[in-house]
Length: 232
Image 1 (tube, rainbow, N blue to C red):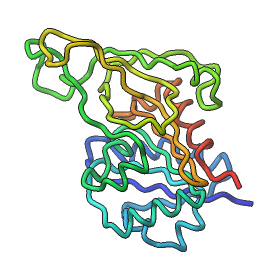
Image 2 (cartoon, helix red, strand yellow; image 1 turned 90 degrees about the vertical axis):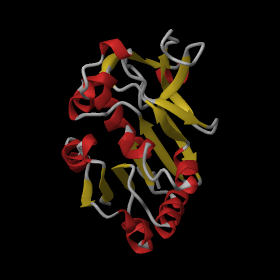
Image 3 (cartoon, rainbow, N blue to C red; image 1 turned 90 degrees about the horizontal axis):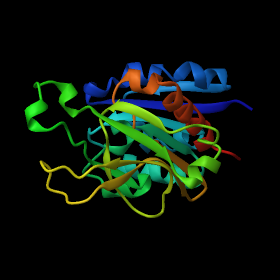
Protein backbone atom coordinates (compact mmCIF):
# COMPACT_ATOMS: atom_id res chain seq x y z
CA UNK A 1 0.00 0.00 0.00
CA UNK A 2 1.33 3.43 -0.96
CA UNK A 3 2.22 5.70 1.91
CA UNK A 4 1.42 9.40 1.66
CA UNK A 5 3.70 12.23 2.75
CA UNK A 6 2.53 15.81 3.11
CA UNK A 7 5.32 18.40 2.81
CA UNK A 8 4.25 21.67 4.42
CA UNK A 9 6.74 24.47 3.85
CA UNK A 10 6.96 28.24 4.08
CA UNK A 11 7.43 30.88 6.73
CA UNK A 12 10.71 32.77 7.05
CA UNK A 13 12.66 32.52 3.80
CA UNK A 14 16.02 32.61 5.58
CA UNK A 15 15.75 28.86 6.13
CA UNK A 16 15.20 28.16 2.41
CA UNK A 17 12.09 26.03 2.97
CA UNK A 18 11.67 25.07 -0.67
CA UNK A 19 15.28 24.17 -1.35
CA UNK A 20 15.63 22.37 1.99
CA UNK A 21 12.57 20.18 1.52
CA UNK A 22 13.44 19.56 -2.12
CA UNK A 23 16.57 17.85 -0.80
CA UNK A 24 14.43 15.11 0.79
CA UNK A 25 11.44 14.77 -1.53
CA UNK A 26 13.29 12.43 -3.93
CA UNK A 27 14.27 10.26 -0.95
CA UNK A 28 10.64 10.00 0.14
CA UNK A 29 9.55 9.05 -3.36
CA UNK A 30 12.31 6.45 -3.57
CA UNK A 31 10.95 5.00 -0.32
CA UNK A 32 7.53 4.58 -1.92
CA UNK A 33 5.77 7.70 -0.65
CA UNK A 34 3.29 9.63 -2.71
CA UNK A 35 4.30 13.22 -1.96
CA UNK A 36 2.03 16.26 -1.83
CA UNK A 37 3.57 19.71 -1.31
CA UNK A 38 1.75 22.75 0.05
CA UNK A 39 2.61 26.16 1.47
CA UNK A 40 -0.73 26.45 3.27
CA UNK A 41 -0.52 25.40 6.92
CA UNK A 42 -4.30 25.48 7.11
CA UNK A 43 -4.25 22.10 5.35
CA UNK A 44 -3.92 20.70 8.87
CA UNK A 45 -7.57 21.64 9.46
CA UNK A 46 -8.70 19.32 6.63
CA UNK A 47 -9.57 16.12 8.50
CA UNK A 48 -9.86 14.04 5.32
CA UNK A 49 -6.41 15.05 4.07
CA UNK A 50 -4.81 14.44 7.43
CA UNK A 51 -6.49 11.06 7.92
CA UNK A 52 -4.91 9.94 4.65
CA UNK A 53 -1.45 11.28 5.52
CA UNK A 54 1.17 8.94 6.94
CA UNK A 55 3.91 11.53 7.38
CA UNK A 56 4.01 15.31 7.65
CA UNK A 57 7.38 16.85 6.78
CA UNK A 58 7.11 20.40 8.06
CA UNK A 59 9.50 23.25 7.26
CA UNK A 60 7.71 26.43 8.38
CA UNK A 61 9.72 28.86 10.49
CA UNK A 62 7.74 31.27 12.67
CA UNK A 63 4.53 32.14 10.72
CA UNK A 64 0.96 32.07 11.99
CA UNK A 65 -1.56 29.24 12.23
CA UNK A 66 -5.21 29.03 13.20
CA UNK A 67 -6.45 27.18 16.25
CA UNK A 68 -8.40 24.86 13.94
CA UNK A 69 -5.25 23.92 12.05
CA UNK A 70 -3.27 23.20 15.22
CA UNK A 71 -6.15 21.09 16.53
CA UNK A 72 -6.20 19.20 13.25
CA UNK A 73 -2.47 18.52 13.37
CA UNK A 74 -2.64 17.37 16.98
CA UNK A 75 -5.58 15.07 16.23
CA UNK A 76 -3.82 13.58 13.22
CA UNK A 77 -0.61 12.87 15.11
CA UNK A 78 -2.54 11.38 18.01
CA UNK A 79 -4.27 9.09 15.50
CA UNK A 80 -0.98 7.94 13.97
CA UNK A 81 0.24 10.51 11.43
CA UNK A 82 3.97 11.14 11.81
CA UNK A 83 5.39 14.65 12.18
CA UNK A 84 9.03 15.37 11.33
CA UNK A 85 11.30 18.27 10.58
CA UNK A 86 14.47 20.15 11.37
CA UNK A 87 15.75 23.42 12.80
CA UNK A 88 13.35 26.37 12.81
CA UNK A 89 11.00 24.61 10.42
CA UNK A 90 9.62 22.56 13.31
CA UNK A 91 11.26 23.87 16.51
CA UNK A 92 10.55 27.55 15.83
CA UNK A 93 7.11 27.33 14.26
CA UNK A 94 3.91 29.07 15.39
CA UNK A 95 5.40 30.71 18.47
CA UNK A 96 2.03 31.94 19.68
CA UNK A 97 0.49 28.45 19.88
CA UNK A 98 1.12 26.67 23.16
CA UNK A 99 -0.79 23.65 21.83
CA UNK A 100 1.72 23.32 18.99
CA UNK A 101 4.66 23.68 21.35
CA UNK A 102 3.28 20.94 23.57
CA UNK A 103 2.95 18.63 20.59
CA UNK A 104 6.56 19.07 19.49
CA UNK A 105 8.10 19.06 22.98
CA UNK A 106 10.92 21.52 22.36
CA UNK A 107 11.09 25.18 21.34
CA UNK A 108 13.93 27.29 19.97
CA UNK A 109 15.02 29.91 22.48
CA UNK A 110 18.28 31.26 21.05
CA UNK A 111 21.34 30.56 18.94
CA UNK A 112 24.16 32.31 20.80
CA UNK A 113 26.56 34.05 18.44
CA UNK A 114 30.21 34.95 18.32
CA UNK A 115 31.72 37.38 20.83
CA UNK A 116 30.89 40.96 19.87
CA UNK A 117 34.46 41.76 18.89
CA UNK A 118 34.48 38.92 16.34
CA UNK A 119 31.27 39.87 14.55
CA UNK A 120 31.32 41.18 10.99
CA UNK A 121 27.65 42.07 10.64
CA UNK A 122 26.40 39.09 8.62
CA UNK A 123 24.58 35.81 9.17
CA UNK A 124 27.88 34.10 9.96
CA UNK A 125 27.99 36.04 13.23
CA UNK A 126 25.64 33.31 14.50
CA UNK A 127 27.76 30.40 13.26
CA UNK A 128 29.74 28.68 15.99
CA UNK A 129 31.86 25.53 15.91
CA UNK A 130 30.10 22.91 18.00
CA UNK A 131 29.49 19.19 18.20
CA UNK A 132 26.32 17.15 17.98
CA UNK A 133 26.95 14.35 20.46
CA UNK A 134 25.00 11.11 20.54
CA UNK A 135 23.50 10.07 23.86
CA UNK A 136 23.59 6.50 25.12
CA UNK A 137 20.04 6.12 23.81
CA UNK A 138 21.12 7.59 20.48
CA UNK A 139 23.85 5.00 20.07
CA UNK A 140 21.18 2.28 20.26
CA UNK A 141 18.23 3.96 18.51
CA UNK A 142 17.46 3.00 14.90
CA UNK A 143 17.66 6.63 13.76
CA UNK A 144 21.22 7.21 14.97
CA UNK A 145 22.66 3.73 15.51
CA UNK A 146 26.09 3.28 13.91
CA UNK A 147 26.67 7.01 13.45
CA UNK A 148 29.34 9.17 15.05
CA UNK A 149 29.25 12.55 16.73
CA UNK A 150 29.39 15.31 14.13
CA UNK A 151 31.23 18.64 14.26
CA UNK A 152 29.46 21.60 12.63
CA UNK A 153 29.99 25.31 12.11
CA UNK A 154 26.49 26.74 11.95
CA UNK A 155 23.76 27.96 14.28
CA UNK A 156 23.78 26.08 17.57
CA UNK A 157 20.24 25.90 18.92
CA UNK A 158 19.45 26.48 22.58
CA UNK A 159 16.15 24.65 23.12
CA UNK A 160 13.58 24.78 25.90
CA UNK A 161 12.04 21.34 26.31
CA UNK A 162 10.10 18.94 28.50
CA UNK A 163 10.99 15.44 29.68
CA UNK A 164 8.54 13.56 27.45
CA UNK A 165 11.09 13.63 24.64
CA UNK A 166 13.64 10.88 24.02
CA UNK A 167 16.93 12.63 23.35
CA UNK A 168 19.18 10.96 20.77
CA UNK A 169 21.81 13.70 20.56
CA UNK A 170 22.74 16.87 22.42
CA UNK A 171 24.90 19.94 21.99
CA UNK A 172 26.52 21.93 24.78
CA UNK A 173 26.74 25.71 24.91
CA UNK A 174 29.87 26.75 26.78
CA UNK A 175 29.89 29.36 29.52
CA UNK A 176 31.73 32.44 28.22
CA UNK A 177 32.79 35.60 30.01
CA UNK A 178 30.74 37.69 27.55
CA UNK A 179 27.52 35.76 28.17
CA UNK A 180 25.15 35.97 31.17
CA UNK A 181 24.93 32.25 31.94
CA UNK A 182 27.37 30.82 34.46
CA UNK A 183 27.82 27.18 33.48
CA UNK A 184 27.64 25.14 30.28
CA UNK A 185 24.11 24.41 29.04
CA UNK A 186 23.29 21.17 27.24
CA UNK A 187 20.36 21.22 24.83
CA UNK A 188 18.71 18.39 22.90
CA UNK A 189 19.79 18.41 19.26
CA UNK A 190 17.92 15.32 18.01
CA UNK A 191 14.85 13.90 19.70
CA UNK A 192 11.80 11.74 19.24
CA UNK A 193 8.42 11.90 20.91
CA UNK A 194 5.45 9.55 21.09
CA UNK A 195 2.08 11.29 20.99
CA UNK A 196 -0.92 8.99 21.08
CA UNK A 197 -0.45 6.58 18.18
CA UNK A 198 1.85 9.03 16.38
CA UNK A 199 5.54 9.78 16.35
CA UNK A 200 7.39 13.10 16.24
CA UNK A 201 11.00 13.52 15.08
CA UNK A 202 13.05 16.72 15.44
CA UNK A 203 16.64 17.56 14.49
CA UNK A 204 17.85 21.05 15.37
CA UNK A 205 20.72 21.26 12.84
CA UNK A 206 19.55 22.49 9.44
CA UNK A 207 19.90 26.26 9.17
CA UNK A 208 20.93 25.93 5.52
CA UNK A 209 20.92 23.30 2.80
CA UNK A 210 24.65 22.67 3.20
CA UNK A 211 24.09 21.63 6.83
CA UNK A 212 21.30 19.25 5.83
CA UNK A 213 23.52 17.83 3.09
CA UNK A 214 26.29 16.97 5.58
CA UNK A 215 26.32 13.13 5.39
CA UNK A 216 25.61 12.37 9.06
CA UNK A 217 22.91 15.03 9.38
CA UNK A 218 21.29 13.91 6.14
CA UNK A 219 21.28 10.30 7.31
CA UNK A 220 19.72 11.28 10.64
CA UNK A 221 16.96 13.24 8.89
CA UNK A 222 16.24 10.49 6.36
CA UNK A 223 16.04 7.84 9.07
CA UNK A 224 13.95 10.19 11.20
CA UNK A 225 11.42 10.66 8.41
CA UNK A 226 10.99 6.92 8.06
CA UNK A 227 10.82 6.36 11.82
CA UNK A 228 8.12 9.00 12.25
CA UNK A 229 5.87 7.75 9.45
CA UNK A 230 2.72 5.87 10.40
CA UNK A 231 3.54 2.28 11.23
CA UNK A 232 0.08 0.69 11.08
